[in-house]
Image (cartoon, rainbow, N blue to C red):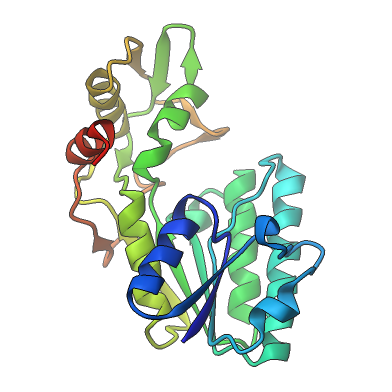
Length: 251
């Protein structure tokens, strides 16, 4: 089966392409690096010819509110139009757990708009909602840093390994369209401040993690369950400490 992966040269996309190839599928990595531009439409028709499934795991180059909204809506509209013309049987989109709960957050708002376009399209679809990736832990800590301190709210947090996100995307893409969504999350649900206190210590980061109920996550103040699945999520098996150990050892 030919499966086109938009964002196929990125963190999750490259994993998805490799996993699909191991399963015997024709996985096409589509990105500006490979001559496919979802904003201009360049290369879409050629890439989608004969494709059964299109997976979108792309990310916006800018997270400024208007720029990120324009990226996801323009990219998604162009993909869906090209898919309709090519007779693609399923569109799979990777999104974030909690998009509907943080409407004041520009990135989450853009992802929600992307999801609505997918849901309203005649193309059969599946949406994978994932929690935050282990790979993004350093960047999340940096985003709240103030000198030698990192401020984190004591809300629930349930991050997941990128490999397990990719596995969920692959499982979804080779199955029948859900015309709905599935949530995936890591195996451990902890308080965000406690997680980062342990994570920074484990990675040798000397910064102090300060518990602050009003600390913002990329500009948004979080509620208790803003970032975790409500119920029925598919849980990964890899714990952060094990992932970090393997990552640092290069395995």
